[in-house]
Image 1: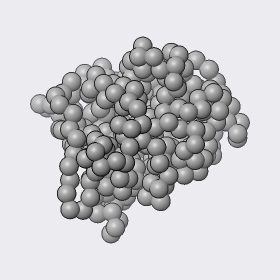
Image 2: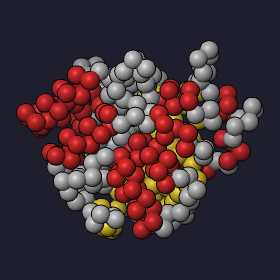
Image 3: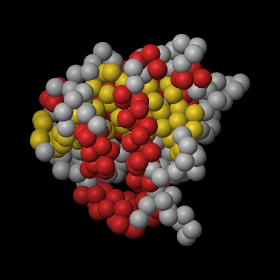
Amino acid sequence: MATIETRDKTRLNVKIWGEGPPVVLIHGWPLDGGSWDPVALALAEGGFRAIAYDRRGFGRSDQPWYGYNYDTFADDLADVIAATGAHGAALVGFSMGGGEIARYLSRHGAGGVSRVALVSSVVPYMAQTPDNPHGVPANTFSEIAEGLRYDRPHFLRGFFNQFFGQGFIMRPVSSEQIDLAWQTAMQAGLHPTLAAARAFATTDFRPDLAAFTVPTLVIHGTADQTVPIDATGREVARRVPHARLVEYEGAAHGIFASHTERLISDLLTFLGGDDDTYSDSAESPIRQAMIDEATRETIVSPGFI
């Protein structure tokens, strides 16, 4: 592990595994870079250099009072890329980590990025508004904040059940996986946890979508109740013509744990593909997977893990 210092002197914990083309993995809320471990290991074994870091306020990174907004998060990503020499990297963002990618591309440009993948991502906009009817109602975010302030350990235990789609019958992950997520989340500061939730709940990334000029893969579960697919994954595919949408039928939010092998396979295929495969030509799979107002033609990966 290594520690890098951002432009505002915040120290971020960074893990670098493997050698080869760089892939930067950006974690979701309220976890840390370790949530990517199985994917990072597979990437390293597959000939890539996997770089996973803990967002400010989370994991082993500093917990400053300031900087929990997407402009700063994007600058932190830029500093990680610079410090690790990851020019030309592929960027993979889970959940709120997709927001870092969107704001990075619009704020710093796509010149040093080879391709991007959004996994269960909050992009382009989480909040329910008249022009975003499939978003999450504002009172849901208020309830999250209240639950965290009142009894964070109890709230997060229930939150992770929904996060992984855990129920009386459906058990996509082990109880130990939920325990691990809970323990990881409790390492974050309460202030960063609240402030980061406010950031992903209120930031509108729709203006940032024009900056998605590189090959783009979108992976999302159709049963995601934490980040609804209609407001996010399907909307990105509708607005970014060259984006390829892969839907995991019946999957909840935390597919990095519930569908690990499938996710690894899809990412390795995408990362190892040539740019022509994801071009904007009429014959490309991306063009075939475009979603517009009239028709929806979605690529669905077969099987469950």
